[in-house]
Structures are given as structure tokens and as C-alpha cells.
Amino acid sequence: MNIKNCKTLQIPKISSPRGSLSVIEDSNILPFEIRRVYYLYDIPAGESRGGHAHKILEQLIIPISGSFDVKINDGSHEKVITLNRPNVGLYICPYIWRELDKFSSGSVCLVLASQPYDESDYFRNYEEFLLEIGKLK
Image 1: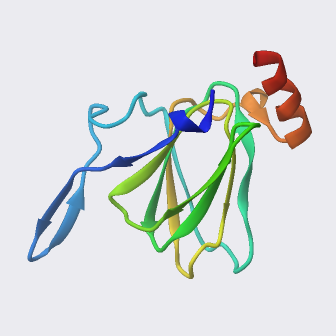
Image 2: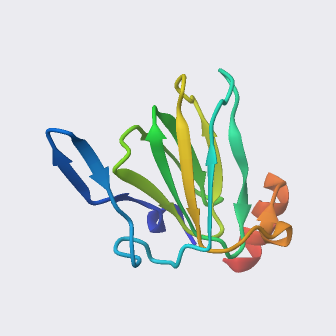
């Protein structure tokens, strides 16, 4: 895989004078079925999250509140995407190293995932990730 497969996705937004509503249903924008949902919040200033890659798992990362940066890396290329709108998420495919940082105060990061949690699906060591990527190329 490479970072070109990762992309921002527009989440449908319905606006009215009373506020906005965004909906994800029946995989209307996702290339996967949602099997797990989790969210990150109360992240102290200067902290980062992520620092891993997955073998199978696909994700959509959404900034429900505030903003943060997502650095993605496929072993050859690296890109930083700032997420700051709750109707735009970042799709991340398997074999992409990700790091999240620069969380604004009060930010909330929602993650929709294609699989339940499985520790064996993780690369938690960047050097091991690079070795595995080298085998795939």
C-alpha cells in the first residue's frame, strides 16, 4: 500500500439555522463496514497518539471537535494532514504508519474501524514495519 490510497473523505453535512448534522450510514462514504468505534479526548498538550500501523485494519479518522495533525507514512513517502472539520475524515488503509499530534485544546478524535481490536494486527515498532514493507515491495 502507499499513502496515495489514503484520502480525505467528505461526510454528508445537513445544515439548518439550528445547526449542522453529519451522517455516515450504510457505508455511504466508507470503503469498509464499521466493526469498531472509539474516540480519543482529554489529550494533554504536546502529547501524540498512534505511532503504529495495521496489517488488515482500515480506519476513518474524524475530528469531531477541535483539530489535530495526522502524519502518514508508507515506508517511502510521508505526508501530514491537518484535520479540523467534523464533516471531513481521513481514510487510512492497511500498511500505513500513522502518528497523531498537535491536538488543540478540547479536541475529540473519532475513529471508525473495519475490525474489532486485535493486537496481532499491529506494527508497534517502526523498524519492524519497514522490514515488512520491504518484503511486500
